[in-house]
Image (tube, rainbow, N blue to C red; front, side):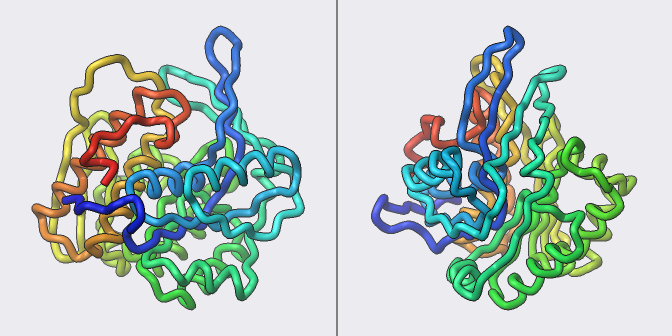
Length: 311
């Protein structure tokens, strides 16, 4: 599925409208490590690491930690579109409960706001794919503003609700915002955990409802059961979670890695894929997610990729 992409010739770009924050991982012995993070930053870094040009449009503070994040983004080869930000840099403390990350977000993350200058909109429209995977979907005004940006950009639009229960204080409002974004989306990527967090009932019926509403493809990750792809044309493809040596270190970033592989494929081949192509792309996404689960921090910049994955 993956075509060669040399270091000096990245594939058409992916623009991520999302977040950049400081991930603080707290271990069982009480020690902590700090990583550049946020679903948006992780996704953009992963996209660039996989050989596709990446742009991150995110509010980034002018404080010390904001400068640290800007440097990390630049070092990863990602182009930053710094949206206006009057808040301090947000943080997310993650702890492990039964092997899964549980997040505690700072006030700056709960209060974040996204606004766009004409220059920001032009930068977003310059990519071939626009994707959002962490966004204040509970806020009708911010959702409406992003819908307008997407319409003006006129690019393939991918939405991942990326539900974090500790961040979603109003589930009905968040669900409504997600559905408004899905109404203008070409592809929706979500997990069984997202579906539970959105409180929408049966996963199969929810996927079918998204396809009836005009979404062209839905990618559903099913934890240990892998991933399934469902398209409006009736294509169904699946891929299992691969067996890997060594223990699972951290599931943080697995969803972002999955999405990174998917959008790189879309940038290269589009979204009108046949069953075989969807199967290949889904398998590659699961392979990458399994590898990410064996490193700490969830960022693809820390992962040693195979020659096939890097190109």
